[in-house]
Length: 118
Length: 112
Image (cartoon, rainbow over all chains, first blue to last red; front, side):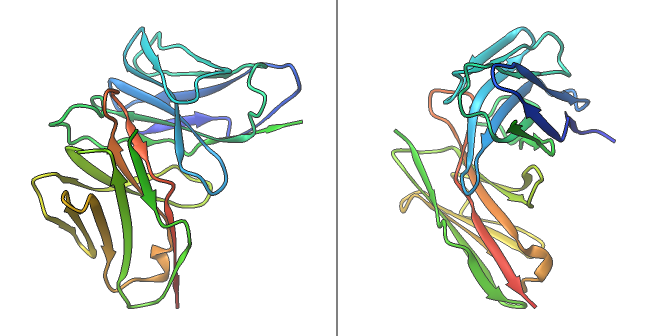
């Protein structure tokens, strides 16, 4: 079955610690995205990548870092510089990037990682 | 800057009725608009896409309209069922950036 796998489902971070959230897709999609969702709020874009070895900052990139060394994988690191990391993190992918005017491809989401502070 | 607004108040309706959710946007002329469904603790799931030159799109009990003059999309679920209870998000392509911007979503509760 094709899809996006996020792990772990729940993660706890200690003060001053970096943690990495995993996102793997077997859909052969070029574009991948990371979002943060806080209670009662919409999705806010952290980072996105249109192709391997390339990524761009979203609206709330401070305190986060990503890599895109393989097409299937787009891990997100929440660094100690992110002072309010408690949130629900969602990874998504699409065949091509969303900005194309003639694109008709939806984003496929994983089931998220819930990060909490110890 | 572009802005998307969805009713933050939950919509409660009776089973069998039609649910209508609204997505308004400003400072924007999107080429298309997408609707997603999100269940608690899960990622959003794509439902429908409608392009700027399409007035209406249907899929089973779902209907989406897109009024580029009013800068508004309406999402309808006919013959609603308790299983339709979820949060529904609209999303539009960013201007100047290759990504989507999502609304905050409207929670729908269908009472049996």
